[in-house]
Amino acid sequence: MARKVADCRDYPSATRCTLTISGEEDEVLRAAVDHAVSVHGEPNEPKLRDQIRSMLKEER
Image (cartoon, rainbow, N blue to C red; front, side):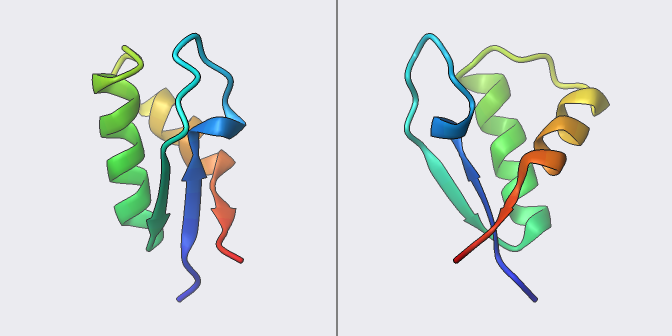
């Protein structure tokens, strides 16, 4: 299974966050949603999960 990556540097924010998360898609999605909610104050709703899932990249 290909590993996926979520990189906060790809999503500009006021905090200029540089966190990168990599792993299997479900792991990355879960961790990225938790991070977006707890650090960036995003609402924990299905729309956020869909948005993050669509922005995941294949790990090189």
